[in-house]
Image (tube, rainbow, N blue to C red):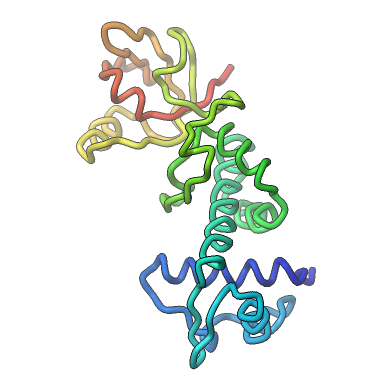
Length: 220
């Protein structure tokens, strides 16, 4: 399917942003040309005309306006990956196709709602940072998160671990050794004085602070 004018512009801005995130300079000559996509040089010229990037000797730099737009596209893409993986439980094969479509159609309001629903995840399923939105900075709770810290679930709840945000690497190692990993189903037995989890046939006691760093979704 041929990309729309706006999708092609957003895709190139996203490519420049991602290249810089990887610590590399974006060069038009090395940008892959796909049959269904417009010529990257023409897209770059249009972006330059709109004041979204600056082109010099085949290399491009984002302007402040282009930076904000590119970051919003990356944010929508990575949130879409989370939505597809964590809530829809889609397979890896369809993840990128889903995210590439949704990054172009999610409005700002819907993006904020999805982010809040997911509990404001800090990273995508591949571990890359999700740029924050206003909802993250406000810690908005206008929509009840489906994915939320383990510490917010009631005793007796069975949950599926979605992601972990441990403050210290040693905590991640310790949790991993007990099987507290993304995808694991655990049962929360008690919350006071410490949180006690059942992982398979093993009971694990963790501090409430650590439970606040484990994000999960309830399961039946």
